[in-house]
Image 1 (cartoon, each protein chain N blue to C red):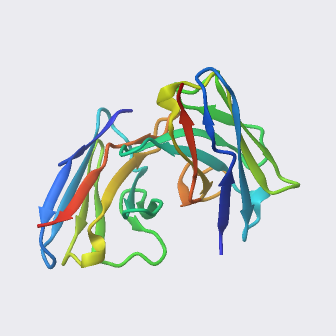
Image 2 (cartoon, each protein chain N blue to C red):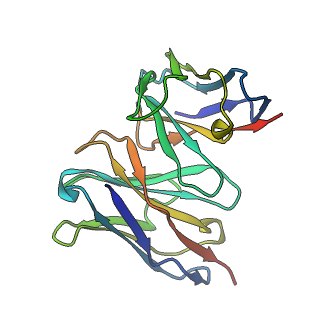
Amino acid sequence: QFHLVESGGNVVQPGKSLRLSCAASGFPFKSFAMHWVRQAPGKGLEWLAVISYDGSKKYYADSVKGRFTISRDNSRNTLFLEMNSLRPDDTAVYHCAKDSGVWELLPTYWGQGTRVTVTT
Amino acid sequence: IGVTQSPATLSLSPGESATLSCRANESSGNYLAWYQQKPGQVPSLLIFDTSSRATGVPSRFRGSGSGADFTLTISRLQPEDFAVYYCLQRTKWPPLTFGGGTKLEIK
């Protein structure tokens, strides 16, 4: 069974940085693209970024481009999201999600998420 | 591509049928997916590529549409179907774009 566990969420001040991790198990991690999606409190879903199975391709939503960096370590079955210059509107639950394939751009299975709060 | 869902809230009774709409501001091809999110849970994939049901999804869930207009129809609503539904377009990216969601609530 697929298993994704996010960690690294915290309460931080505006302008600070945070690194999220997503530990994957139950499937061949190195064979699937991976996504980050967030959900602000009481709001809808916002796609943030995708990385190809081998890390060679990365794409971002405009709202995080230049501030967030997606990466992966296939030797550790782990996905990362480096978040810099955090703003209050980045407050959300951040989910990693497994793609349906090497590059299908279809999030199919989601982790439970890690909460990020940006506040003074 | 911007994606708009309607209605924002739909109030129906168990046993009735629900029709949820997702409209893109330009042609979205057939790469339109639907997700269901129950309270306190993460989203789960229901439909992909407009009309293909994900593994384990009951046949009462049906996706249809083309171009810029798509529909999720849920027949014979069950109590467990009351949730928030999101559509996702993945034709023109980045970004992948979610609709704002439709809350299906019990009347």
